[in-house]
Image (cartoon, rainbow, N blue to C red; front, side, top):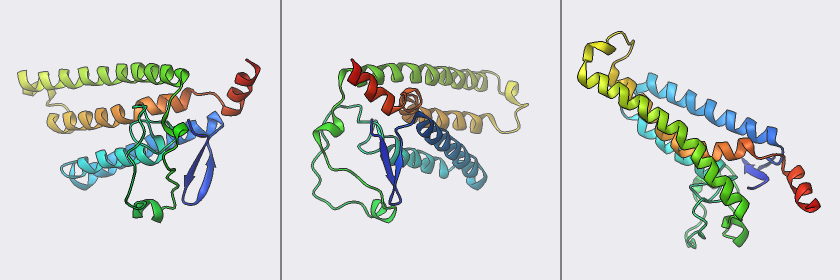
Length: 195
């Protein structure tokens, strides 16, 4: 896990656990606001796709894990492909620092691999429960359409919203669990030095 994040030309210290927790809360509040605004724009007809693109963008720039970049090392434990093309214009415009491939940038040690596996186990328990709720609503919708008539929105839009939220959670929850649970990095380094 990286201890700092470069955003808009400023270094953000992510070593304290409180800073990482604030980042996680900010990300999910932002995603919830984006999902709400997408509802008001077009009831997620077209903007639902943009919601998924925003999640990929957040993973790439802030969280990491499934992409290179962000605070979490890639889960794949593989080196990135060598880049011939220049740094993307969006990264230059936002003044983001995209580190080059370095051996320490993508290799996870045994502790990090165990944490990654535990975070995925915890995250997908929540996603599984969400998928069961989606299945239950879809089953009620298919078997008895009048059962869900009391909802303020149509059952189809509710199902779509839950599926969209499940996709966003499946892409961000493991990294968020890692960032939330990791102790202060200065304390962790002192514990390793004493061992």
